Length: 418
Image (tube, rainbow, N blue to C red; front, side, top):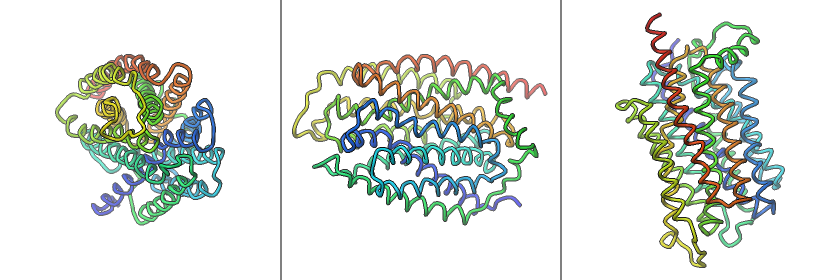
């Protein structure tokens, strides 16, 4: 039987909360890197690999399980992912160490792979038509960024300003474990009709579907766009707290809080994109956004030059760059949900899990690549110069969006002719 309106609302609420939970954990890498450097005494080179412990499991688990997810069930997969990450969070303050931090991000990556494939595939089951699909996608991604924003402040709340390396900050994971448990209970009481997601293919056939999708020009153009976008977003988001601390000389707690401006920008931009995309062709909006991102980099980074440290640094005395540079998130925001919706709404619902698996794999690889390269550049040439080099993938992203537009137009013409 189709889901009732009440079940639909409950399921959407559970999906939003699940995404917010992972927004907090996934984007805590920058804060955890900063705390690990100060508390566990590791180097920047060691810290730069932390992103890989999150992103590589996302890629591997998505690749191996995405096409099989309809058999497990999307709702059950979300519950499993939240349970795994909840246990890992509960162990973090008990086994306080850098190796446990790696284990936590492995668990987070594995769990997010299950959650993202399930959430994105469920959107097609809960909506009808491309506009409704794009709208719900933007809303869920917008709330994801609200989770990212909340994460900066939640983590900062547990940091001891007098002794940033104090392990008391690890107590934040008790709170996160409790939140994960509450969402599992909400999902357990929700229902959703998942019959349209099952195509009757054997397990091996479903796995091969992912490779068949890659061969489609539209999907290939999308994957290039997604890889480049996430490379840019993660390189900025992961290393922004360290940029604030080392280049702008903000106190540790303030460095984490100031990075939340980036999350606010992304959240506002994605929520607003749900309205803008109803009126503006998606490819024009995204092209303007990429150009605006590049212009903001060229405007903001010179403001970070020659910033001098102050013992009494506060929000009133913070450098202008601390406020201007994170606004790049406003222009990044519409890109990811828009390109995801373009490709998913062009495919049958039974292919959404396989396609989402590819989305997650290439997003994870882009995130790891961006964070690792930026971390190495931070260590060798400094944070300001490292962020200047983001202009190169921005130029490539502009070309990829043009390629995606051409292929999506061709796919629409083929459907109309058929």
